[in-house]
Length: 310
Image (tube, rainbow, N blue to C red):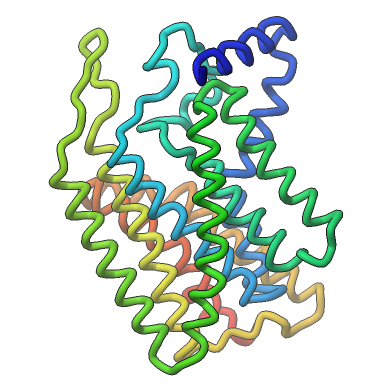
């Protein structure tokens, strides 16, 4: 049934002469890391730090769990399962590795859903629009032929659970001194366990025309990156609570805009340039961990320290 659904969407693409491809390629970017982190950075540095922290924890906890499920289930992409499926070519570079569950949908749920329930729950028009973004991102993954319906549905359910869990985790951490360290330590332990699991489990080694369908090392690197991300967030969060005490509300709107644009230069370099630089010096798993770690740590600790007086 899932393949039949994707074939129906594929027929729709053909009938409409691919006219909607660009639209859904655009909407799927609302589940991509750079767009999401650019938004969260602005909220953290200039608007409401606590809200941004909620979104960051949603994002990284969701990504962590998503990676764990992917390497456990090891579900192939739709076009591998059935060669009648032909995904949109431009969507394939962002759809590597295993299929289940959908990472784009999980990330969209974590951030746009987080905004809907945390910041705009009393503003129904905005909350409804944000929830619509999630559904459109999920549908775009089906329309582009890179995910099955169950990939998307499970991500939505998982994302809802994470929204609920993160909300109460942050409340719990605020109620008693030292709980932030307990949280960071637990995250570190869970990350060590995931890395151990990823490196030591068995993976399917299927080939087509002499080419390995999914390289296990790619999935291991993804786990390293996911662990780096949640650890970088945890310790950036603790560092701010103990030492930095970043005040995002200070300054005029012009000052805040300048602060955001200046910070975005660094964030863009970390996304676009830094990964290729460090890949020359260290192994891919270590590079993946550092690439994951540096983004949330930059947002929550490095840039706030550099701009405490800006």
